[in-house]
Image 1 (cartoon, rainbow, N blue to C red):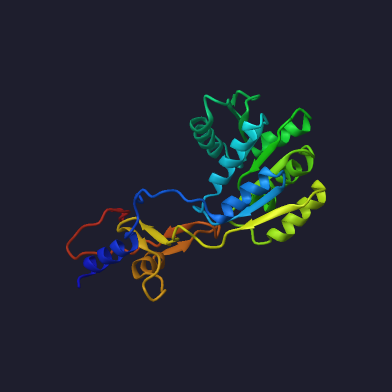
Image 2 (tube, rainbow, N blue to C red):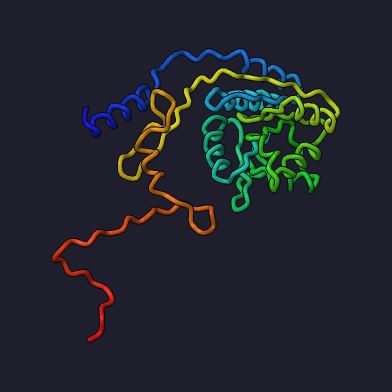
Length: 267
């Protein structure tokens, strides 16, 4: 098999099965039902589940239950771009029955709406003003609490939130969830439920975007780095800062009989 054919075969195998899944009847997962039941009962709940397992469904279902009781909810995210995306998603889900607002550093839409999407920093600032009356707080990507620079924002949000509010915290990458739940229970004065989902419903594959060859698998069937990826990085080196990659320029060979431009000897 030619080199080109080998690369194409590896690429097809790597991309096999990726696409739009066939439509099937939705069946709620046990971990989703448990989390929704905990939140509906007023318990602070920490959900740790892989990406693509349905954490957003838990949040939307919990928000809906609180809204139907005439209570207010807020959905916080760590990024403005993500807040804008969630704002559009919640508008489609809940309007016109309920009003949906947005609070970020540069946008303020219906700040007193029934459910508000906000960056975590903005939500924390509202708590400092002692004007928040939220009954349900969804902290998406709660693992940011471990971030050296931004982590205190999540800590302060949990500490300053009204005692009567309920927290739903979502993450795909918290390993010390017991430690975090114990701390939350200590500062909030009530138990924090933990819901764990370990099975990954969406397969995780590692690929490499080659500048010339396109998408390639990062490793071959033996678990070794794919040859073309290894060859690409073999032609790279770090710059003087030690932080950025640069291409090692290959010396250009002189071709006999061809004149080369450059500095010459003065006559």
